[in-house]
Length: 65
Image 1 (tube, rainbow, N blue to C red):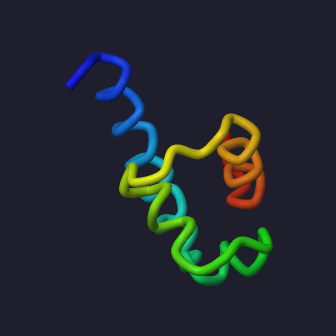
Image 2 (cartoon, one colour):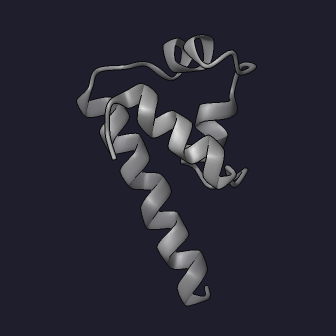
């Protein structure tokens, strides 16, 4: 795994931790952001890489930076 891919995996796992610490479900976040089912899971697992804009929007919804 490249250094960039490793960093990205850590970033996406931290996104999951932030969401869980705020006690926000994936389903709730998807509905709030008008995303289809499974998008947040795919982002958090690194299956799909969110754009910078999407990542910032998720962080905004979570009240985090």
